[in-house]
Image (cartoon, rainbow, N blue to C red; front, side, top):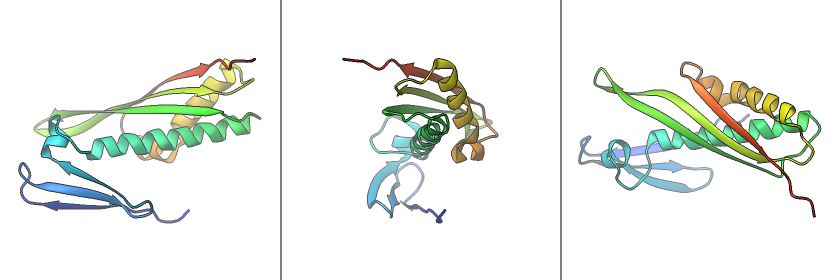
Amino acid sequence: MAMRQAEAIWEGDLRQGRGRVRLPSSGHEAAYSYSSRFEEGSGTNPEELLAAAHAGCFSMSLAGGVVKRGFTAERITTTAQVNAERIDGRFTIMSIHLETSAVIAGLSEALFSEAAEEAKASCPISRALSGIPITLRAQLVPTVTA
């Protein structure tokens, strides 16, 4: 796998400063600030970017696990919630909760649950974050037949 990178630029002090993150491979850029990270201000923040990375990684890993079981996902939708709290005066990521729903024709609940748990344990972002609790709620959505 190729080396991946992103860039962050910060200008100014912590509370009044501002920053931008840039994803060179896609050209996407986003602003971030003290307010977007620690309050409810507009812009992104590192925890949101971590959640996006984890949701994407898990979804791809689950798709791979489903293929290993002989099926193809029509759609996998995953949300990752990063819980950060102030501990001893420092913000600390305490846990991540993954919520996923998938439309996969013919796959049993048992095989889906097995694949989802395997994806949670084996996706590279989960492995990188193995020092914090990661929980999962996985739902197989019934396919509609005409």
